[in-house]
Length: 377
Image (cartoon, rainbow, N blue to C red; front, side):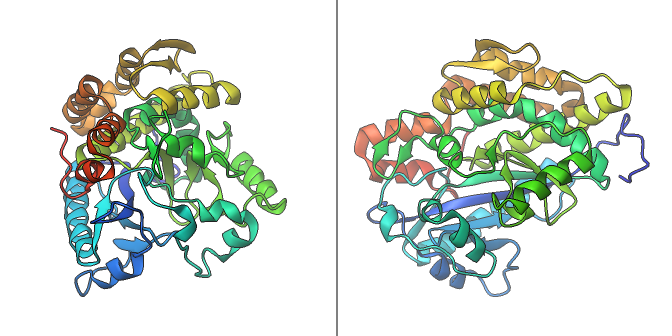
């Protein structure tokens, strides 16, 4: 899609997809978080592309990433393959590759972080925050050529992030403590100066001016360290959604990717027809995200179309209804409906983690969060 294209009638595959998943490394015997990323990466098969499996800020995590995809079937194939490959390498290093937004057990004080040139500015500016940055997310990239339309998509997505946070909540435990939250990762992440729900921008110039002002004052060392829940990628021509915990299963990651692309297509269609919903005020969006992180889908969420509190199932239904036409066009509707219905029926991954913790502590949790083995359906 180019800058001059009419966004009102997009081909099904006009917006490309990419997914990145961050994983915890947990000791296979004790369940404690361990800084063994170097050992895991060394155990990968020869010729593994570094852009598919790589290290992270903390040495207790690794990340897998798909190439540019045009369908959820493509995304599934890559996620399933690289989860399995990386889990095998982790096992050789005595670890479980764990799909959990936070480590369930261990001690943050004995973890180590990367000292590569990419991360040194964070150590200098964020200091102790880096030491406790043991959180893992699922990031979805939506690719389109036009920077102006990327901002249209960013503005259109922001209101719907709380529902995605609720559906994917997968971090109730923090280093041996039950936090009482479904997604502790979400609120833990808010300690960073440029994180959480973004403002509405309107134009790409406004976005760039805001980012430039934040980096100039030292709130972030550069544009790539602007960590809003939805942002323009500093490396790729994409809108990057960073709001959700890493998903326990591939099915849930596909649900997120499908909804993000569907909502992006709605934003472009409404931009073309000049029929946009009012942008939620920042304080309301932050409050809605907090409630989603606290309760997952077990409580009430905010319906952004009307700004009112509703049962979680009703809020999820509103998100799907918003992009039903677009999900049908891309062939993603059935998957999104089935997976979201199962999450609403049986509870989020956080519910499974908490139940396992109550049954037998971290050893039981290991069986729930093992990334290569987790199944939803």
